Image 1 (tube, rainbow, N blue to C red):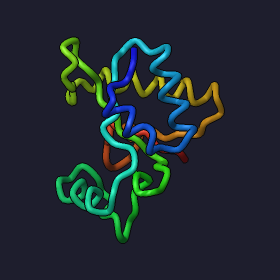
Image 2 (spheres, helix red, strand yellow; image 1 turned 30 degrees about the vertical axis):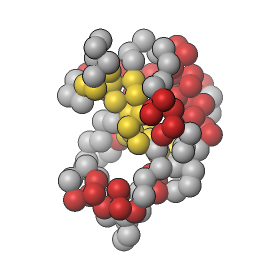
Image 3 (cartoon, rainbow, N blue to C red; image 1 turned 135 degrees about the horizontal axis):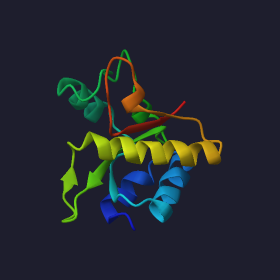
Length: 128
């Protein structure tokens, strides 16, 4: 499995530990993914907040996406036809389990957005 050019460019904006996590997943994982977001500008964070895709407004509460390099990334699951599948929660849980297993083996401390208490963000992985 390989990442698309767009996904690779977004991944390169992330912290090296997150890059290692994704590259290991790409090497061994069996569900194809893409990267939809690494570093996020203030404007993009405010847009995510406005569209209820984040609970962080980017000013009073900053996202780990706003750091340089980014301490977070968002991913998506790919269908067989390479279109994004945003709705299959079971696949997101599966991929997240895989990410958490890799992170544990590599001593990379992460949080999956699906484990958030108040806002389930199944596409989100961040460094603790």
